Length: 262
Ligand SMILES: [Zn+2]
Image (cartoon, rainbow, N blue to C red; front, top):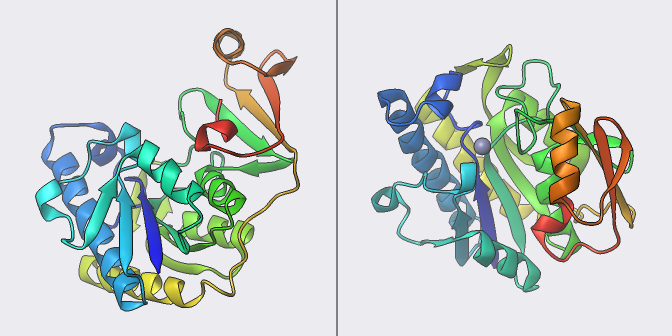
């Protein structure tokens, strides 16, 4: 069996202040990257124990460059975002997982809640339902019949994943206190939880249905300010402006992850 693990930084265990994510070249940020590798390796280990033979991992936060390569689990194979797209599309992936996930914008106590661009994207709405990056991953994987079986992150991210995806395997490694702070669980316990969740995720491949919202998808993006909407209209093809701050697109087929972005 083959598993793909997408990563983000906001939902990593021990990452409990906004600065640890945003202030590069600081001891806090370095610690966050080390914890990213620890959480990821725990998930890789659990996936292998759960029956995965090949485990592909993606450095997903802020366009990559977060992994500390020498710390990566020796059996994990890192792929870039193009490689990730190809893998999901290949029809050979049995399980999709996310490590370090965060909740959609507008979530109470969602640590660093946002979708894609925290400065510009206010709401991202798919078929009338406010959605975030967890749903985006699920839509893309689901389009190729890959079930989203496991998520790790703060409590809000795990709650959101279950609201969209049903009874998937979760490791809630911290809870947000307002938006910009979190209280993490014991770090060694977090790794045990992640490993167990990945193991259990592999065991629920057959019971978790791939996420397939009705097609065509109607995707509405509400931006914070009208000028942000102006520049989106200049940059994006195939989108329609529906009011001063909102644009819409209809997606008839998801062929690439970019199809559901703007
Ligand atoms: Zn991120």
